[in-house]
Image 1: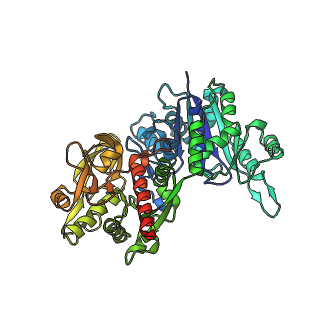
Image 2: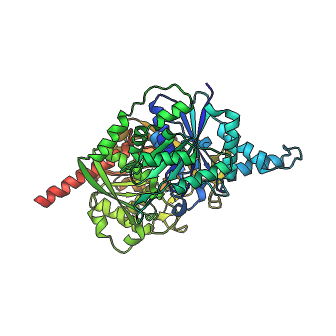
Image 3: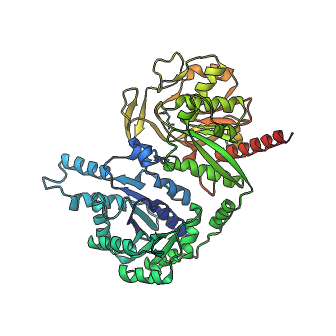
Length: 549
Ligand code: GLN
């Protein structure tokens, strides 16, 4: 069967949750037995989001095949079973890069290279690059209708409608219906304008997904249908929900999947949403709650730790408990530990770059180690854990990562000068490598040590986890580290790279060089998050018992 395409655009304002909407549509179609794929098109000029500031852009999501992508791809992976890869995200920068390289090679035979058709053709080629066996491809166009930057993308999907035909393509537009307090009314005008703008460039949306705070009355739906020229049953209310995992259920109750399958003329079975209902129910009715400190740098912008936040929720689902994260700025812990940190049931130090707040993180780790508070370190959180351990337990004063002090007497975390494969070309990783270039990226195998916390959590010997970092543990210090009670519980199969460490004399102190948060799903919580939350719950109960005594 030929694939069908759903194009998701956004109007009125940004941040309406197009990524989440696309992921939820994917989930609904999967629940009807369809094979789906998702793609995100980013209109900015950067070649990839790898070098973009997390304060501005949110988290960089890493795929199994090592692409640094937009955080919406994280939603796609968490909500669906689609095999998300490099091919699922591209930017204007990549499109121009390809077209300009072709031009330099003379492939346009001296013709004038233009936005239409050359740029739009390259966009179309990348959209249509899909494996056999996929029934529906959901394509999310980044940005908001009306932006200059997204025009070539919109032009490309306008053309695709003609190329593919009506039953093989569908336009879904996500808009906002604001509630104006003074008038005590919900307003459809911004949606009308946004649709007008879309129609001005030749796109008539088939379905409107209307974000609202309140229930959308049938009267207002009818009005939107009339003014925006869409079917009455194609005006879907996307009412705010308490939890993102309720979105597929809300869309289904509004008839979205029914309408999509009708318009695309696909035969599909009735959806089975029991799993989603189960998740929503567990989140709504937790049996317990646990407080976790996330000691990091990008604590002001929630999106910077998107996957981490979700993985904590999943860890909670696995233990029927609500996880309450406390994002603590590590710079505030440099002189003394705050009462907020002292009160939590578990401490996590996530990944990060740059030396700001490093000593504050080390202080938090020392506290977790000494006071036997469950500790979970991710990437930088592992590097700093080993720094803390050798500094304080092996007497290596001044030990550090070379990222923060190149002249440290104990370079416990350092740059392995290695050739790394990036986009099928080898690049040298050394102190001169440029920022976007030479990280260890994507999935790598890791051998687990029998009897370790990690081995018990995963229940197997060999795992695959995703990386995004430049620095590694320095094997010259292996003995020093092991002699002070550390167990190396995960190592690369060739024995050269330390991937997981644990403390033997501690209820749960585990840190890994990879990013487990990228692989956690609501239906399949990551084993390390599951066990960390479990250990934190136990710690909480023990604290309570001590108080009673
Ligand atoms: N900055 C560290 C490195 O590059 C850790 C990176 C991370 O936490 N993702 O190795």
